[in-house]
Length: 258
Ligand SMILES: Nc1ncnc2c1ncn2[C@@H]1O[C@H](COP(=O)(O)OP(=O)(O)O)[C@@H](O)[C@H]1O
Ligand SMILES: [Mg+2]
Image (cartoon, rainbow, N blue to C red; front, side, top):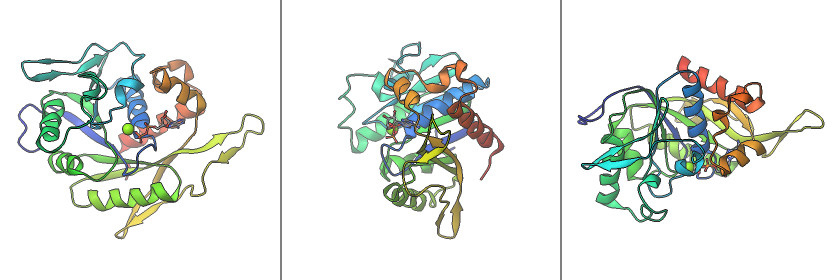
């Protein structure tokens, strides 16, 4: 950790990242955060997508305390042992949309480095792309990368771009989540692939990036997300396929699998 006196502590920092938008980074971030919360960890969730934040929409059904500014410091929103911070909580939907250059950097420093996280695990929901904001965070904050992709060539290409970027920094890759990969057929009990590139491990610069887990397209998860209830918030789902997959991913992260 370089130069940030306010940055208290996070034992483990996980970047949820992909160059591609719409593959499920925010959805995975929120659900991994609630998985760790259910397991009894203190968790931080930072919405690093400053211009198009999704986290407030995805958790609006959870009774978080308000996030607010106090003497130029950001007070994170809280729910039990979960803290989170997002530009989406600090104004109208369009307020952050046009941040650029120094303003973007300023917002990042206030919203992230201004908070005393003091958590066991900090999840960072990254925006798509390979921008200044990415390099700023990756340079200043050592952590582990959890890639998210769909099993499709356009997402795969952007994943390679992301791999090329993170190679410049001191970051460990936990693995790749292949999201919206298949549907579980309720009649035949088979898994039906949704794209044609499933289960492909990636190589870049002689490094191999392994598929840690494939997640289904889950219509219930999609519905719950739309009303702001994270799938993993509901403990009644304990035996459901997607729930068990998230528990597996969490256990792999805790092992520090590469
Ligand atoms: N496993 C899933 N099953 C069903 N819908 C999903 C799944 N993962 C993501 N989605 C949906 O896909 C859309 C994009 O997800 P999002 O997390 O916003 O992607 P990103 O953060 O990568 O842009 C959202 O509408 C979300 O609800
Ligand atoms: Mg997102």
